[in-house]
Length: 189
Image (tube, rainbow, N blue to C red; front, side, top):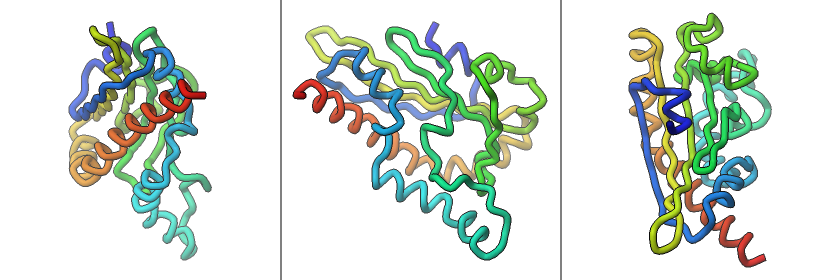
């Protein structure tokens, strides 16, 4: 069973992207786990635009709820890795200016959908899969799934998803290309 199915079998929102890469699956998954590979100036600008209202509010004396560093892979919790897949989890009220992140310590806590800390929070799983292709190369793909626990969360998340989905898709495709470039650079080193 794919890890993403284990951690989030039911969901209302999904986004998938794939790229054929000339690199070993294990190397690509290793790179996918490295937050530094995900750091990109264009992605940082997208995140900065998303966070600008909350940061401006804090500057003008409002509550400073965002961490000093921009949102990124470090905010996700590593869930599990298999030979072909790596999965990360995130929970929160993403429609809030500060993401409304819900902290959890381990994959078992994330898997407990009905746990009190997730009350009204959406759960998200981001994965990367790397499957060898016949004739060489690897199919590197990513999938993002979001499950809203109730109608109220779904009602709040839906407009947010419609607004951020184009940028989110662009970010996912860019990360796939960054993984491809990092694997190529590592092979030439």
